[in-house]
Image (cartoon, rainbow, N blue to C red; front, top):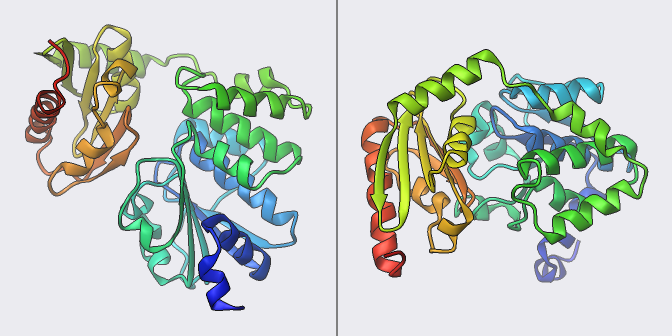
Length: 321
């Protein structure tokens, strides 16, 4: 390959070159993989399989909905850490290498590492062949760059989009164009939606109620910021707090924090991913309106710092009353 020509090519062309040249790939996504992460991995697997490539998928763990998608598509993945080294590795829907858990070292040993992500950019990830675009879901990136008419591929993409937009709460006009294009290819929207819909379990209801009981409320300029602690379901609790009137919610578990914010907060210049990345001795990242951090030594101290950073940024931006 002409290396000078290779350097001049854009990131997507370089990724396609590797896809064309190489034959064996391992696709990995973040631990406790969600539907967008697993849907992206599955869709990319189907895309590469159509080109007669050998593909495996690995991740440390899955959430409940991701497991349902796997079962529905009759797929299995490997949860264990591979002992052999992989020449070609693809990382999807992962904002930080540490979020790969047991697969972190596998990435470091690979010769060709491709990262396709839609979160706020990560400096460490930029050392790899890094494609980052801030779309509402990672699955949408896969669909735009590496399309296929395979039925399983389309279902995996659609599921990822539905899940990561919160049933379209965070969708934009481009998202709906993508959805329409998929539906025109014969995919049953209600079928995929029914796979993702879950009744609120008793344990989730209790978690939300306990979180409400423990929450602290801060009035910062014209915003309502809340913090609370819970043993599980931080993301669900954070979204519920927004539904009940909070503008920003920080929800802590034993050593991690999930955060959510309404659109009016983002318009004031607040970036939750940047705040999560700023926490000391933690591994943070995500989106402007939805982000998290793991491996936090003192979550109470960290949440107080989050509230303090919200106030500092609002003062700096001159936002609010």
